Image (cartoon, rainbow, N blue to C red; front, side):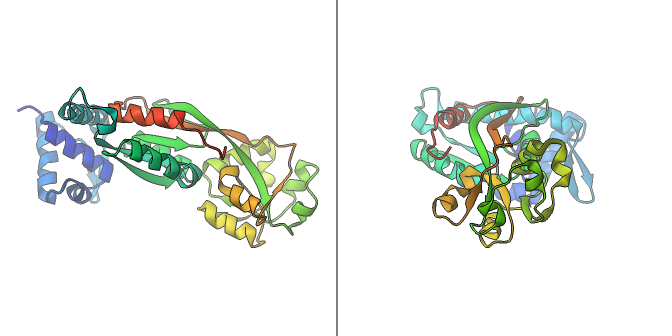
Amino acid sequence: MPVTLRQLEIFSSVVKCGSFSEAAKELKLSQPAVSMSVSQLENILGERVFDRVDRNLLLNDRGRAILPLAVELCSRADEIAAGPNTSPAQYVGSIKVGASSTIGNYLLPVILGGFTRQYSRAGVCLNSSNTEQALQDLSSFKIDIAFIEGISFSPELQALPWRQDKLVIVAHPNHPLAKRPPRSLHDLLDKPDWILRERGSGTRTIFENALSDHYHKLQVYLELGHTEAIKSAVASGMGISCLSIIAVKSMLDHGDLVEVNVPFLDLTRRLYIVIHKDKYRSRLMNAFLRYCEDWDSQII
């Protein structure tokens, strides 16, 4: 018995959703139907594609091997159904995007709005997390493309330089650093009220790398998982932080925050578009990549 396209579609959905029940909701099927389809696929292959551990589904080696092929075949089937002469504006499909929080919260909403207006029949789903989580989701094919701030990638991932960004040290206007900028790294590290993102975020990693061998001297007062929370904490006078200029520009313009001059630190960084090397690039995905590469921002 041959493997069917429907079985591969259901298998791919289970991987992405992480469970039979969530895949059933997405596909508008019953949970037993989804479970039966995966079992039939495993019977045809002669081995399991998932390990069942305490009611959790874990993709095993066999599953990881066929997943890129399954995703590609489903994407190609969608393109065949759309027809070879479909105009770009009529491209049909859905793109799952993952992004680190700075890009996901401050850049991509504008980009995605423009893209969906131009490609009105396309859908884009955005999930903002941190760099580490976005790359994990990309490696497991839970998303199609990632926009990140980090600089460390797996061999299976292809990183495309996208935009230049700059981190800035920010403080409340009445903070001592705002009134008397640091003259050395020691003056900066001597402050006990640093408020930073959690480990695993691109912003935190870039800042620590800029401090080189001295980052362990950093006195972290608070770790917060969201940039907006950090901005509010700093604006209320709770401490100082290092954030992307993209995230704090409006508060700097309004005087709620001030930038601390640190000429002895290089806080520039690259933003990247990352794709899995085994990911099939459909016409819609290629159109999305071109749109993002051509997009010009007045912020950066």
